Length: 92
Image 1 (cartoon, one colour):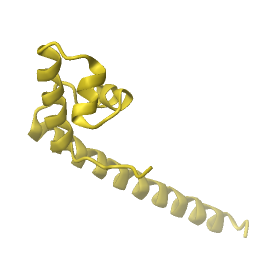
Image 2 (cartoon, one colour; image 1 turned 180 degrees about the horizontal axis):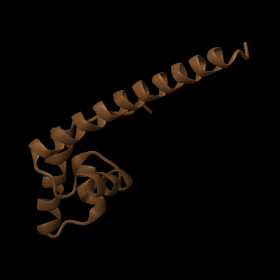
Image 3 (cartoon, helix red, strand yellow; image 1 turned 60 degrees about the vertical axis):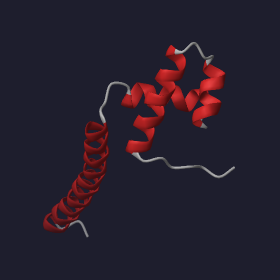
Image 4 (cartoon, one colour; image 1 turned 45 degrees about the vertical axis):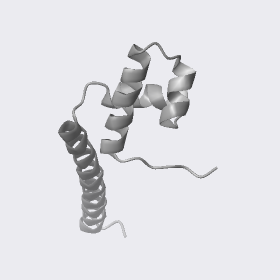
């Protein structure tokens, strides 16, 4: 089954829609069918995006993306440093 990717804005709007439906007395299964996600996905989204506004969700995603980029950069620099240390010690 193909995996759908939702943007942070879509996730926040689906969570708000689900909250409204739950407040109206709908059952969790019906709510999840209406917003077209599984209960596990809903729980994961609620845990991650629970109290966020739309602009905060966008900011969170951009920070996560930048964090991944910086981690890759640190890994590359650490590898370069290790190579230079080995070359400087004469163990090649």
